[in-house]
Image (tube, rainbow, N blue to C red; front, side, top):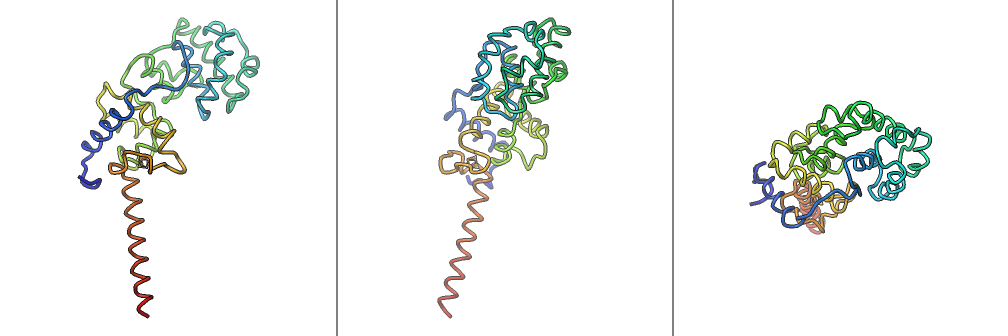
Amino acid sequence: MVNDELSGKERYEKVIAWFRENMPVAETELHYTNAYGLLVAVILSAQCTDKRVNMITPSLLHDFPTPEALAAATPEVIYEYIRSVSYPNNKARHLAGMAKMLVEQFGGEVPGNLEDLIRLPGVGRKTANVIRSVVFNKAAMAVDTHVFRVSNRIGLTNNSKTPLATEKELVKNIPGELIATAHHWLILHGRYICRARTPHCDKCGLQMICNYYCNTRKIREAKEENNRIIAKETNKE
Ligand code: SF4
């Protein structure tokens, strides 16, 4: 069955089957030991690499191992630990505010529901869904730039315009027990293979299922055919 003939359901089934076989283990690359540590790491990871965040969190969490400890620190002090991440000023403020709110309103515990999580400074829907799926094992799909791009390219979403639209489409079509893993499948595939500027389609096993690849190939073949016709006509003259 070629790409054009796949129904939406069949495309999902094939993509899931491929990832299950080729990426049986898919987990966050952020290092963490508890919910608080992961929350700190995910806030720091906005527009920054996991590798960079993993270099910073050990000393930060060593000196501020609990929300109570971090809540007692000023943003200026926190800044000194995180100055090498992107947007360190904002993130220092967010971390201080997040810790304070955890202590004052949530008994020092990271909450598990979306409404509470997104009230925390520095926590948007994406970060909240990472915490919900990784820590609380909920069927929550966090849509970051990789998930958004890869889903659109493969054709799991249809020219989705917003992360929320992508999230809804993926949650509707992926079995609940696989949503948390699917989030990591799509992130890791986007990070290492289906890269933003130059996707490594030559190394990708999803070629025949992928809209982007099949459409690009059709355009290339049409151009080559066109060039062949022009060359033939030119030789006749
Ligand atoms: S075939 Fe290319 S565009 Fe499609 S998922 Fe693979 S790397 Fe991405």
